[in-house]
Length: 482
Image (cartoon, rainbow, N blue to C red):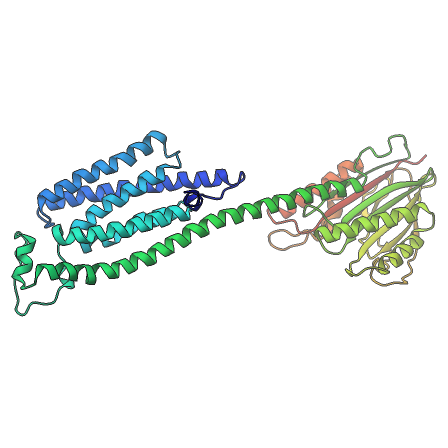
C-alpha cells in the first residue's frame, strides 16, 4: 500500500509546494471549463437527437443526457464551492468526465471516439505520473466497456463488418439485431468483429496517448523541480554577487566628506557598475599630512574576473604608494608584480597623481588611461592632454614617465573612466568627451558632488533606454589652497 502511495506522490519540497499547489488549482480550472464544454455538447446532442437529426433511440439518449448532466453537476458544484482550491478535486473532476465520456462513446461510438482522450490529456496537466497512469488505465477499461455497450445499444459502424453479398437497406428504426441479420451477418460474429476490428486499433491509440500523457506528466513534474533548483542556484549566485558588490564598494572610499578636517581641498567620487560587480575603481588617500594620492583605473573585461583583478590592483597601488616614490615608480613596481603572475592576461589602465596639499603641485603618471579634465579658477573645464604610458599588466619591465602641473586656489580636477565618453544610446552613438566637457561646464564652479551629478544626469539622458554596457566611475577634486 505504501508503494502505491509513493507512486501517486508528487515529490515536492517546501520551496516547490506552492508551485505544485497552484499547478493543481490551474489544472482544476482547466478541467472545470472542459466539463462545462462537454455538458454543453451533451445538451446539443440531446437536442439534435430529439429533433431526429441523430438516430439514437430516444429513451437511451434521454437516460444518457440526464445521468450525464447529474454526473457533471457533482464536480461543477464542488469546484464552485471550493473555488478550485482543493488538490483532491482533480480526482472527482477527471473521473466524472471519464464516466460521461464513456456513456457518450457507448452510444455514438465512432463519432465521438476522440472524446475518450480528454480525461487522459487532462490528467497529464496535473504533473502526477501516478494519477495519469490511473486515468489512462481507467480510460482503457472504460473504452472496452463502451465498445461492448456500443455493439448492443449504439450506432453500428459498418466499416467493421464484411460487405453483404447484395445491397441491403438498413432501416434505422428496426432493432439492431434485426438490422444486422438483414445484412446476413451472424450477430455473435458481429460482436467479435466489432471488438477485433474496432476496439483493438483504438486500444493501440489509447495506449500510445496514455504513454505520451504519462511522459508529459513526469517531465512536467521534473521540470518544476529543475526550475526550482535553477532558481535556488540563481538566488545563491545573486546573493554571492550582492556580497561581492558590498565588498567591492567597501574597497573604495565612499564616506563623504572624506576629510572634513582638511580645508585645503574637497573631494568626491562615484562608481556605477554595469553589472553587480565591475572592473573600474577609484581611490584617494593621504600618504602623509602633506600629500594626497588620487587613483582612477579601469580593468579590462567585466564582471567577477575584472572585480578580482581590480581589488588586487588597488591593493598593490595603495601599498606601494604608502612606501613613497613618484607615480611613475609606483606604476612600474605594480606592473612588474602583476605581470609576474598574470595567467588571465588582464590589464588595467591607471591615472595616478600625488597632490602636494600645501603648494598645489601635482606629480602624475598615465598608464593608458583617459585624459583628465582641469578647470582653472573662474574658467571652464578642458581636457589636459597628458602623455600616455603602456597599460599596467601588459608587459613586464615597462617604465613610466612623471609629469607635473599646478593647481591654484579655486582650481578643480576631474578624473573618469572610458565608460563615460563611450556610453552608447539606442542609435549606437557615443557620448564622447565633447558632451562630457559640456556637462562639466553646466556648473563648472559647483561643488565636486554637484559636478559628478551633472555628468551622470547628462549620460543618463543621452543613453535613454539603451543598456549600460560599461562601468561609470568619476572623481572630482576642488583645491582650496592653504
